[in-house]
Length: 440
Image (tube, rainbow, N blue to C red):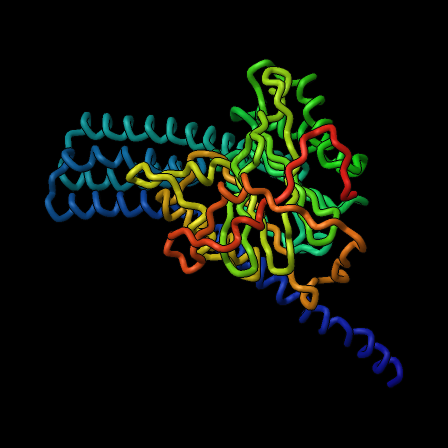
């Protein structure tokens, strides 16, 4: 009896083991069924069925049976060699039986089956080559995805005291990467970010974007002055770019509580969204050339300091957004769209903007497009960080009349009409390069 109990106990644990494996077996069966269903040449089978039905009903003989050769060719577009040969064999068997039934001469029937066999063999080879190219393409796309993650590293939803959201769309969807660039890092001198656009497309543009981002990430940690970060990028590009290559970019930093520094190098002006909902373009007082062209123009970028309080947001973007056109060749009105969709969640705002942009252009962008939205939440909602304290004795920035005259605010209700009231206080300080920074 003791032996029986031991024997029964030894087998008792095997039953739950089989129960635990049951879901795995069921999953494997479902996957196998799905793969089988995906490999079934449904359209070629339907085509063969229609030809057979027409021949049986009409008795047309060779007039319709010759179309059976199209079935394996059709299968080659969606199926592998096994599916192609299966369809070819089925078409040959049905064609032979129907030809005999319709009294087709033996010579004509032999010619039909020979043509059907030749088409099947050629289609099987084409299907094999297509499958090989698809596997190579899948491998290349996986490498492109890895390169994108290495170059454009994912940005978390919160960086320092900010909420952040990014949307990036490459014009070449197969490549999934292009010449637009962005980065946001938290440094000893505050949060710093860059959004830029490399002239040109393809691998050369990707290489230049990698160079800019590498220098920015290093200089952002080393240089206390934001203009020095820009100068580091400029010197690197001057050594490595050709004479007609350049990069437009906006570099921004938040080193002093309540103030945002912006350096614009030939790029589209960022859009500043006040807590009230008004949208103001941040135009530079002294336009500067793109990165890589400073030696040709002699112009140097300047530093703008903006008041950036709780609830304010800053949208940086590339020209793939503002130069997107609809069927009437009209540019996408980004400022009005932002005013319509702005919310307290940057991710929701960019989702709505991106969806509207794709609808505006008819579903596909023809240039790389990047959007980066930065929001300063209120102190009570700052995620994972204590509210930034004001620096004692920090000087208040003086209002810039020239900046005020160029600022435009849009009605947040979405009417697109300009409103007044805050333009004079949005763009306040301009400092050319070479002057020491008081904010870091």
